[in-house]
Amino acid sequence: MTNVLIYIVDALRADHLSSYGYARPTTPNLDALAAEASAVRFSAACSPSTWTKPVAASILSGCYPPAHGVRSRSDLFVRAVPRLPELLQAAGYRTAAVSTIGNVSSPMGYAVGFDKFVDLYKEPSLVSRREVSNTGAWKLYFEEDTTVVLPLAEDVNEAALPWLASQAAAIANGNGNQPAASGSPWFMFLWVLDPHDPYYPPPGYDRWRDTAYTGKIDGSAESVRRVRTSDDIQRLVDLYDGEIAYTDVQFGLLVQQLKAQGQYDDTLIVVAGDHGEAFGEHGDFVHGHLAYEEIMRVPLIIKFPAGFDVQPGATGALAQLTDIAPTVLDALGLGQLADGMQGVSLLSAARAGERPRSLVYSETQASTANQRLLAVRDDRWKYLRVDPPGDYSGRAGGGSGAGQRLADYAKQLSNPEMLKRVLRNPMFYVRRQRVARDMLFDLQADPGEQRNVAAENPEVVRRLAAALETWLAECGEFAALSDTSAQVGLDEATLRQLEGLGYL
Image 1 (cartoon, one colour):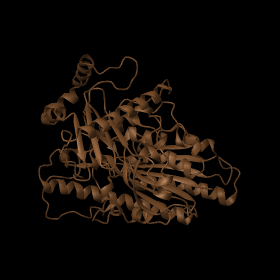
Image 2 (cartoon, helix red, strand yellow):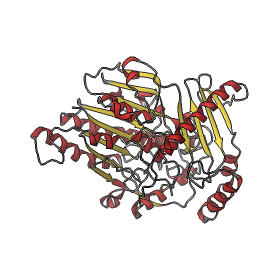
Image 3 (cartoon, one colour):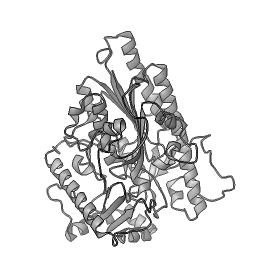
Image 4 (tube, one colour):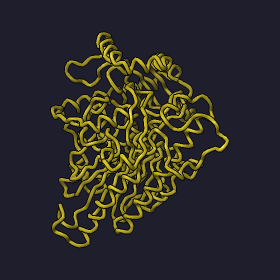
């Protein structure tokens, strides 16, 4: 009997984990997980988008954003695609999820297949216990900031541990009154919001603060706008690292409980970031923009059950978060259930060092008034393409012509809050429109992606551009076979949080 735990840390970039080469000891507990005899650390894992909502759907479905249909701020996860919790539920698993963000919530359509789904950001008890903050993904989204409650990783543990204890008790006691037959395995999906901006490490976790720093950066979204110097950027990084260290401690407490309950050895544990975070490497901060490595590359650690046949340690095989669901199913002996997924099982990479995929992809478009940001990457090269604003959903009535773009711009500019943001930071929007349409980077010679070598390598550009078009066509064919008729409503609490985080 194998249990499954998927633990997603929002906005966690790979190169800020100690086990991925970071100099600071930010993640001793995650490092310990990666060092287990049955664990594999994927050093070249990539996200299929650069913000949370589409990535979460990709993790659960094993499909890419253009296929599962969760691409823009207004999309709901309602398309009839394979879902890992639903498949495991049908196979006899008890299923539960705890989420800290409205972008991964039951009103958004993410609760399908879960016996229990906790929308933690709506818990009334947290209003008085947690800091109320104003924030917003200001680089990508345009609406006014508001106040939101941001649950912490310890709140996730508080919600998850009783359920896990009840599953252990059901097995130990043979309690026939449990929701499922005693001895049934479980699947738990946890989404931790730390270290998403604002960067507010809890007391005791601002460990790397430079006492000589006297600037104005306090981790809030407003302070990100005031970044001017390298010291300001370093202050943001220090706060971000503090949140990572806090999350790592909370993950360690979760592991301790699994061990105390006798469930750790029998549990397949997946830990990943949903996307990375930018700190000015290419002029941008936070996330949601071009899929440079600081945003696209994420940590992915899979600890298989004790005694599982794998080669422990790190592998450089390309991997994608869409591969999580097929890998889990394959490891459970249910690989045939992944036939409808676009991701591939990474089990051959974990067992024999094989390379089950040669390319990874990314697509980001916040709304039809935003440019579509595409990426395709192999072991050496990364090709980025910027498409003009338009409707690329493939739905009836969509389009990307000049008339459609003008209509989309007019719709956005009719919002006074967007106009306010454009006037407050006009150069950002001017610069965004001037970005090169085609970019190619040699990741071996230029891992920081500072030199666009598209003009010098036309054959590479043609090859990767053709692969990108083939991928988009395959996603379109997949989407055409899916049902998009379901409707899900948003409740007021979800709307308030997503507005505060800048997503609506």
